[in-house]
Image (cartoon, rainbow, N blue to C red):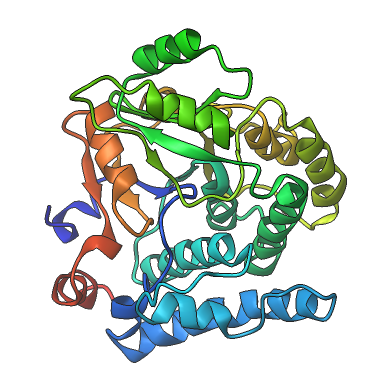
Length: 331
């Protein structure tokens, strides 16, 4: 859709997806558009790298400049150290947000799904770039004890059908993790539990797809992860929200009465529900324009399924020529 004719007439909502996609090379074409964009992205990379450097001095494996290599060069297929994938997804979303806001696109609200809520909080003024990076690292640290003990599956089925399948399988380690759209859900569990879900796929139905996540998030058994995150995250500095922040685990916008850290950490043990969150959002904000800050436009496609006729845009799915056309009138 043409973006520029819409921006002055519509409230803008930035969409921040969770994990599952690859961050490899997602900023490469954007970075090459002009010097102003390069400087904006460099500033974000430098800020996050300052956190990487302080953690490296504490013995963590991720080194400075790894983020730059992941985000700005093509996918080589190399395996990434634990935590780099998540930190790169956070950094990519924050960098794109800064480019868009610098170009004049000021959101009225930010909607974060699961891990994407950290980058959404940066947009909403709750955390700085560096403190958002510290939140991402703290979450990775909390999950380290359950690393490689489970994962997540993207299921081509409605919430109702997925719940029916879960009841039929009746595996104690299998849980509904997210409802993404009327046709897509995610389940979480141990490797054996996920295999049981795959084996239960009906003939002629696309099989579930394993996501690139090294642990089972949104799982009710992970109270230990929840408690560790509750121990470490409250010490990370935060500020009051400067715009509406919608959470798919809370299925609504946060209010001044909410504990924002506990609300985010609910993602460790509770499911997310994008349809319910979007329905709450459009009751609050009329006729919004949704901009997906993810690498593959998946959230924009989910919005289109949940809210038929909604206007969406996914900048990182555009080629360099389209990006240059859309941004040149704003920068």
